Image 1 (cartoon, rainbow, N blue to C red):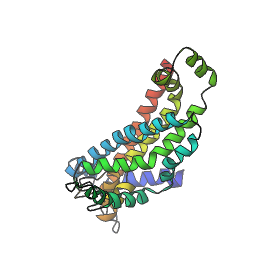
Image 2 (image 1 turned 45 degrees about the vertical axis):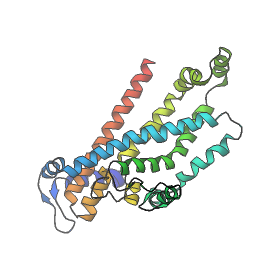
Image 3 (image 1 turned 135 degrees about the horizontal axis):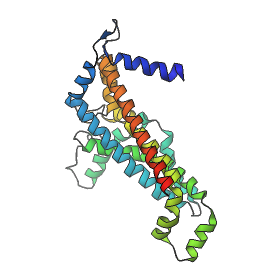
Image 4 (image 1 turned 45 degrees about the horizontal axis):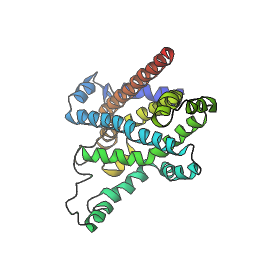
Length: 269
């Protein structure tokens, strides 16, 4: 833990307070990097894109994953129905980016398919903002729905049969059964799934790098991609480290607030 986590974190925090290009010795500058970071329109745009990623990955892959689990968990052959949703999770983020770039790129597979049906005026899927971020969230959903469905299915299978049978005898079916029995019993697992989704979305990098590289310009950059470019493309290790520290603090605060809210709700229940 000390070598792989604490020491790199301390070193990154130190670099965030310096002017350092990776070659000469770091020069102490105090909070100049943080001042520059918050006054940079590119950073503000990356922060807004990251917030869009957080909202999108909570609504789409988690919501669809829950829906797939509910539709297949008590169904004969449900395992085979969930399998196609789970296969994309075996791919890397860069692999998913390459596949969807082929589909959504200019004159890509989707444009050619639509042209075959006489639809020539298609959106510029990866060139217009915020459409490019929205379709990348869709690509992430394609990859993540399966594992969320699997986790929710495990939660559903762990629910005791007695309360379900009692609820059905009382006439609870469909949405009423979900609202009264299934959802309350799934809350602990939902807290885990949502928490993991929040952390993963705040760190979004590979799919964006694979599909748009943050472009056109910086219109689809996330905080993680901006940090990467500042550090390893522009060799501005001080500013890149400042963004890394900011992203770490935001992720930590979001995780703590979410866990506290879940614990508070549990005690109230």
